[in-house]
Image (cartoon, rainbow, N blue to C red; front, top):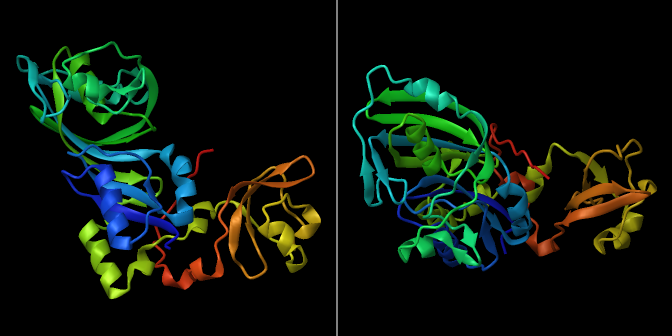
Length: 319
């Protein structure tokens, strides 16, 4: 079984679930999960967790994401993108309309109403299921954050820009809201996720590339070790005499580590004496207790030198 993470390029017309299903066939293993859904018409970075790496899914889902998005003014649709049914049209904006300033005014926090065509649930039912039944219901706005909007290119009526945002942000709805603030309409025409949880577009692999890598035996080079996610944390190596305590997932006292200067205010990535990554721990009163346990069997372990390190690879885990 493979353990770790893959940087997948989700192609257009695939659902995120489709990607996971196809990977299960390609890699011949069931334990696979993704970290953050992309709409079928969107493309780009989709981080995928394998084996023991699936324990990372909830950690990575909450991180910043970056998108390259295009939208057009003068039009509103039921799905808030170009693939939906047009519900309203508008006159062209005036030549002196403050388009760029209006776009930049969304940087920061704001309460965003999610689109009807989304996977959010109301009373146990997904919004898009209700929308397909012809129902439009009131949705509660959710506080999201736009960290940055850059590379704004205006070729009226189309606009292209790069957006860095928090978990839960709907880029379609951001386009909608920009249009409304200008007393006009807007709908998204293209969406590419360029970054997510430290994964970058330039290092992403399509499903066909993954399939070929499996055939040629190069897939190990593309699987990112779980421990790489936590390199910003301090390292602690447990003495061999305490292997039984360690492998059973029990709390660890300071004297069980080779390191004598461990900082109890910071999280700790723990290894055994043979440099096997065990898990992430935090200080609890008198000892270190586990947050996540990742220990693999000897047969499951993969040497670090099989992984091609990417210089720009940088994880930021939000707990």
